[in-house]
Image 1 (tube, rainbow, N blue to C red):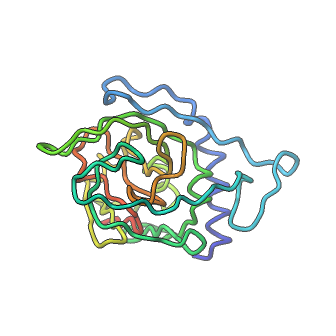
Image 2: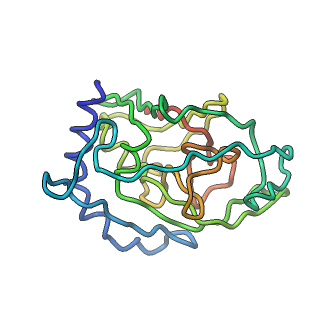
Length: 221
C-alpha cells in the first residue's frame, strides 16, 4: 500500500473512531487505566494537511541518546531501568509495518500514528526480581492500528517485533483490549531513545518483558 493511500485510510478511520476516543474505560481496567483523548476530525477549514502529517500535528524534538548504564541499571535521566540494546532509528525514514493476516498491509509514519486517538495511562512497569518503574505513557491503541489494517478472519495472535530483534506475542483478543497501546510519549515528552524511541508496546497488565521497544513491525498471524 502506498503512503498516500495509507493516509486516506487513516483519515477515514479517524472519522469512525473519534467518538470512541471519548469513551470511559471499562470496569476492571488495570491500575492507572487508559484515558482517551480524541483527535479532532479533519476538515479543510480547520487543518492544513502536509505530506506525512495527515492531521496537522506539531513537530517534536527528537530525543538525544542517553548514556546506557547497563542492563537493569537505573537511567538517572528518566528514573527508568534499562533493558535491551538501544537502537538509534532515524525518525525521517521510520515506518511501522503491519503485516500478516490483514486485508491492508501498512507502513505508517510516526506522525500518522500520532494522529490516532491518544491513549494515556500510568501502569507500573514490573520486571520481577529486578525493578518496578512508575511513569505515565501515551500513544495509540493497538486496536486502532489493527483496525487500519483490517484483520482477517482466522487470525489468532499478534507479534510485536523490535528493531533489536526482540519480539513478543499476544493472543489477538487480548491485543485488541483498548488498555493496550503503542507508546510514543513518556511523561508528556517523546519516548527516550534508551527506552524505545520512537515506539514501544505498553501492556498495562503484563510484565515488562511484553513491552517490546523500538517497535518496527506488527505481525498478525
